[in-house]
Length: 209
Image (cartoon, rainbow, N blue to C red; front, side):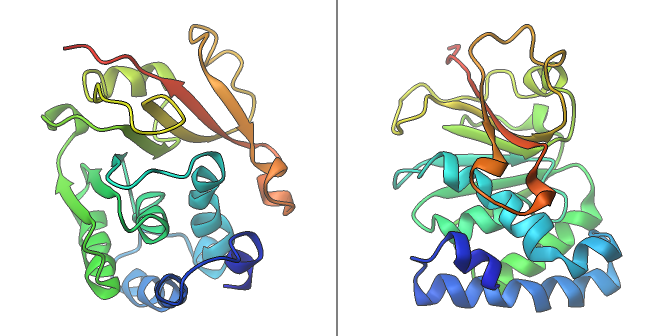
């Protein structure tokens, strides 16, 4: 928890309580349904919570922003971002039901009223969102294909509506067809070696009505 406060010192008391509660909720539920590896559960705040919050270093979502987390898995990056931005709406989507069971229990345990979850493939979601977030569930061309037509037209934020993708390694080949991407190196925000090769990729996506 000190790690979160190190980089986000201005959290409210309620946010701090929710972030503190995350560890016990995940440890409890992970014993029943394994969604986070043993190594990662021991470093939950570094590998999952802080990694998710890298998006909050790139953008401060305006009130009322809608965000879909595709392939949320155990609830990352959606749950930490929902704690960080309580005035925004988050929709966490995954095609694996047992993962969403854990997500639902954590959301309930934290009393997060700005989160809804859906067990489905993202292609089946009819709504549009200001941003789509995810943690490396597929190569960018595949991800763009999955989420086609899901970006809203009206702009609320300083960054243009589109995809915010947490990814690591050399992305040159994967992103060569996307000239408008901006890459943010996480080691510019966080000093821990875990973040040395990790990035947030912002890909603005035009609304297609």
